[in-house]
Length: 148
Image (cartoon, rainbow, N blue to C red; front, side, top):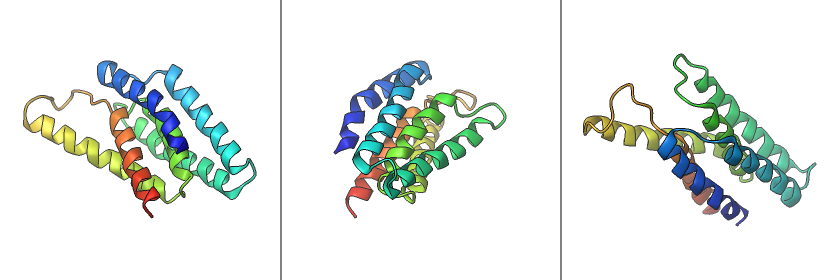
């Protein structure tokens, strides 16, 4: 249920990203800080659950940052910061949720981008806002984790 508290910020970030192709620090950084504090309070700072959540955030950052560093910077650094918050929250359910979260985001983004390319709404070199797909991957992962 604590994940629901993130929804207003996530909805705002998705709208901003779709309009501007930017994920502003004014949304991503408080979300990360808030997620960390909630994790520490709910799970306890020295608990294994909190440690797994922090490790999940680090894993998300590592993967997304490496993709950010590829030639042409296919991902913005806002995506990395958003991925840290969402990865941390996925980590509450276990670090094994991070690959599911990231794979879901990339598959959803790829399907939509392919559709837009085929229909001519997107050119090959046109950027795609990836924040919405991170949120979709996070949502799907949490729904799956809550169901187990």
